[in-house]
Image (cartoon, rainbow, N blue to C red):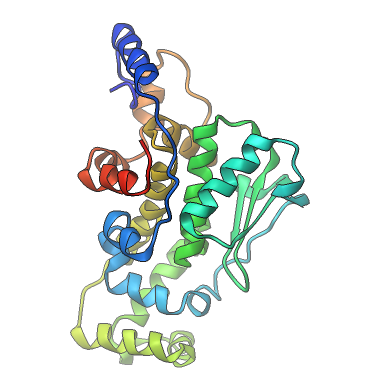
Length: 284
């Protein structure tokens, strides 16, 4: 309840004493493919659409808007904040990430993720002052999306999302009902993706593309939570990236309406899979 912001003052005091007596530590191990698949990914990411996207992320994302990086971009190695540099390095080691990390000014949406031709993670310089757990959430969230090849899906506006839903719906539907651009896209898929598409279309599945997009976003949020171990920090950073105003003390509407990070993340935080994965990675 303290993590969700609903605890009474005496419960907050108890939680504070418990945290002091049992300090946490971040993950230090490496997240291999098996741990990631069974301990982190959602059902949608492991399902037919997830498999199809993983087989050809660059080809499928070619129609999405190109991301913009911001101004005065510089490598993370050039910032003076040693703690921030250490957090980025620690989380990158856990995720086995080779992504290049930069900071900049006026970064659109505070974060820009570029998957191809090489993975780039650019975040706004103002985020350097966020608490350590919030920064760990941010880096875990970003590097997971880059590792999974679905980073372009996290920045979709309403129009781009609707267009992608239509495109993927046609792609995995009846071949005879595809529009000319979608037929061209299907023909341009690499062999592995074409095989996955044929298997999906041949089964006549009714696939909910909207729900799948939500599932992919949930994977990145789970990764951020694994990296930081704090539902409260995750909630604050989710709100920050969404452009929501800071929470106000004792403002119930802020907690209930804005700060709760979604049922999937709460369920994941309370699940055996989350805690087992953190233990496997050496976190407390």
